[in-house]
Length: 122
Image 1 (tube, rainbow, N blue to C red):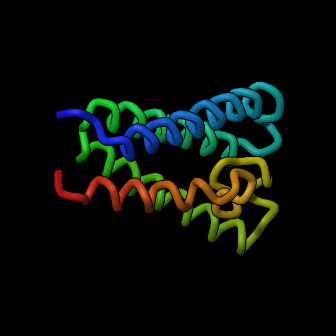
Image 2 (image 1 turned 180 degrees about the vertical axis):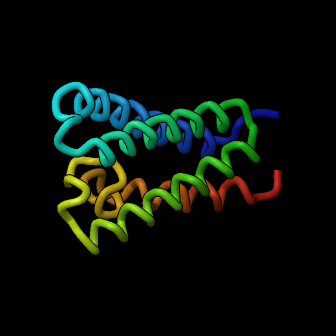
Image 3 (image 1 turned 120 degrees about the vertical axis):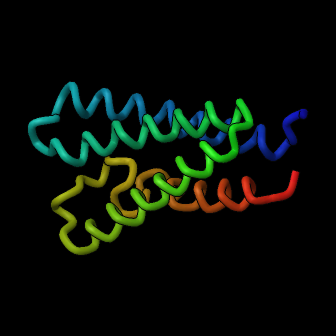
């Protein structure tokens, strides 16, 4: 089964987000981990989730991609809510803080689009 154009766009978007999250989390952990260990660990976890989604979408493992996107959405919403309660818990430069505000809210919108796409009939 050949990938659709939309699935390729989704893979590219998740790939770019994965690369950005990997780069940022490596920098955060290497330079300032002691200032906010939980947020920077979650940033690395986000990078791993994005990478898993890329691999799952590319391999057409829609169930794995769906589970990863649900996990991603729960993470973004949970951390986003926590930043509303106490903004000092999560610095603005983590992937999921403030519902992904630093990434143009893509971390909260992309899993919704991805979940919609994985539910479409093939």
